Image 1: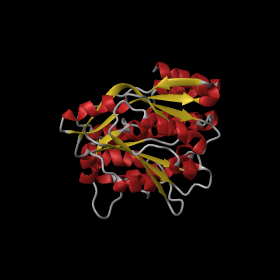
Image 2 (image 1 turned 45 degrees about the vertical axis):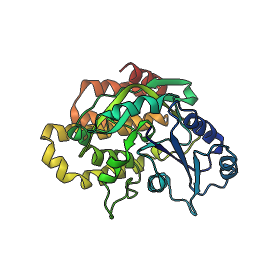
Image 3 (image 1 turned 90 degrees about the vertical axis):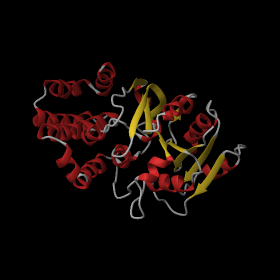
Length: 305
């Protein structure tokens, strides 16, 4: 049975961390090591984690606050597993996540397996499930849009991570203020196939009182600028004029969706309008008008989609 290394970066969220840890330690796939990277918390995180009686758990505390991407990189460097998985400290896994995903690595071409995600909006008491779409060699597709999604659903071969790293590069590029996961998936997909589980294996929680890197839209806008520059050669080489245009539209749609997740319909409207002006899509125009009915209405519409 192959060893899976699970990495949870955390900072001052001991209240939520308990559920995240339990969801890992209670997996039906038991050959794991759980690496907690404490990003110099000043709450009760350290005492709580060090009192957990499970020899599969490894606790590392950063001497200063490094943020989640660098903390994940530290976890990868310390890991001993054949596979690497990630979980945010306020999210949880479904019990059979690893058991279901690891079977798909029997295909030696597959470097990464992701899944559907249950997105739960605590303030609205509403959830919906994402819909995985792309498998196989999806390098051109991933240049157009992040079809893989966020880190908590992903299980990845350690070999795949090592294959894209040289001495000058991090696994997660900390030069990006956001979307470091998307940047990493692009590099992995250039060399490896991907696969997915078409049911949710993760519950991703959105709470208005929690400060996530994903809630700062200025960070995302800056990340898009950096990504457009970093992959300009690949974009020009692999994408037609039409696909390049679709890529820009997807960036605006992503920003609109992020604004909805923080319940800012006015800001979401702004990005839907930008997407419509770029693509002249009737569907996007309809989404623009739905923003006047509030975030829960839009999220319900997204769930039907």
